[in-house]
Amino acid sequence: MNISLLEPIGVSKHIIDELAGDLIAQGHRFTYYDTKTVDAGELAKRSQDQDIVIIANNPYPAEVIHTAERLKMIDVSFTGIDHVDTTTCKSRGITVCNAANYSNETVAELVIGLTIAVLRKIPTGDIATRVGKTSLGLTGREIAGRTVGIIGTGRIGTVTARLFAAFGARVIAYSRTKSAEAERLGVTYVTLEELMKESDIISLHVPSTAETKHLINAERISLMKTDAILINCARGAIVDNAALAEALRLGKIAGAGIDVFDMEPPLPEKYPLLDAPNTILTPHIAFASEESMKRRAEIVFENIRAYLNGTPQNICKLCSSDQKPQKSLKSSIS
Ligand SMILES: NC(=O)C1=CN([C@@H]2O[C@H](COP(=O)(O)OP(=O)(O)OC[C@H]3O[C@@H](n4cnc5c(N)ncnc54)[C@H](O)[C@@H]3O)[C@@H](O)[C@H]2O)C=CC1
Ligand SMILES: O=C(O)C(=O)CO
Image (cartoon, rainbow, N blue to C red; front, top):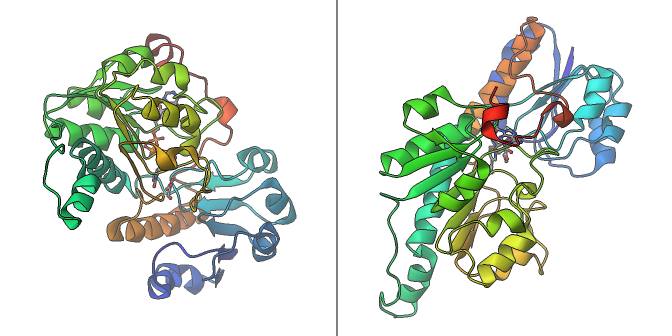
C-alpha cells in the first residue's frame, strides 16, 4: 500500500520514522511531508496514487478526494473531522478514522484553566501587576459550589465533568448520548434549556455538525444568568459568536473563554470577540500538549495497522445528517 503523511502532526521526524518502521518492513511505501500546505492543489498532488493518507489541519475537500483515485482510508490526526468532506468519502466508500482520545485530559485541563482565568481575572491581574497597580477590583469567584453545565458528555466532556466535580462543583449535562462514567460521577442530565438557565459555567463538548451549528445562539445565550460564563474548546461554529460578543458587551453574561472560532487563527481584525469584555481567547491550543502530541501520533499509526489487519478502529460516522438533533433528552438518549 502507498501510505502518506501529508503534513506534520506535531512530533519529530524521528518519532514518525519509529512509528512507520514496521509498515515499511512489511513492504508498504511510506512518504512523509514535513511542510504544511493549505493549498488544495498541493494536497491533491500529495494524495495521488495513495491508498492511505494521514491528514491534520488542512481541510480535505471533495476536489482533493476526487483526484485521489486509489484512496481507501483517510486517517485524521484530529478528534474533529468537520474539515473532511465525509459525504464524498461515504459515496466513494473511503474509511475515515480519527484520533479519538488523544487529547481528552489536555482539552479538559485548558477548560479548567480558562475558567479559572476568567473567574479570577488572571490576565487583568497580570497587566495590573506589571504597571504597578494593586489588587483593587480583582476579587474573583470560586468554582467550588457553582453549577457547571457540560454540553456533550462524550470523551472530552466526561473528563471535563470529572475535573469540575473534583473542584467541588455541581455538574449537570445535556448530551445526545449519556455517559455512564459521568453519571457515576454524579452528573445529572437536564434539557438544554434547563442547563442554559441553571449553569454558572457552561462548557461545550459537542462536535461541529449540521445539527450543532449555532446551537448556542442569541436566544439560548439570553437564558444564561447574567453572572454566568461560557467556555468553548470544541468548535467555533457551535456558537453564534457575533451574538456572544454582543451579550458580553451588553453585560448579559459575565465572561467567556474561547479557544475556537469561525475560522482558524489568525483572526481578522474585526472579529467580533476580539474586543469583548471579560473574555480570554486562545488560538486553538486546547489539544496541544507534549503528551497529547505523542499519543495522537501513536493512535494514527495504530489506526493504520488496525485497518490493514482488517479490524479498523476509530471509524467515524461519515455523514452528520445521520445524526438526529436532540429535541429533549428523554426522547433522544441512545
Ligand atoms: N479545541 C481543540 O483543540 C479540540 C477540540 N475538540 C472538539 O471536541 C469535540 C468533542 O470531542 P470528543 O469528546 O472526543 O467527542 P465524542 O464523540 O466522544 O463526544 C461528543 C458528544 O457530543 C454528543 N453530541 C453530538 N451531537 C450532539 C447534538 N446534536 N446534541 C447534543 N449532544 C450531541 C454526543 O452524544 C457525545 O456525547 C470534537 O468533535 C472536536 O470538535 C477535540 C479535540 C481538541
Ligand atoms: O483534534 C481536534 O479535533 C483538534 O481540534 C485539534 O486541533
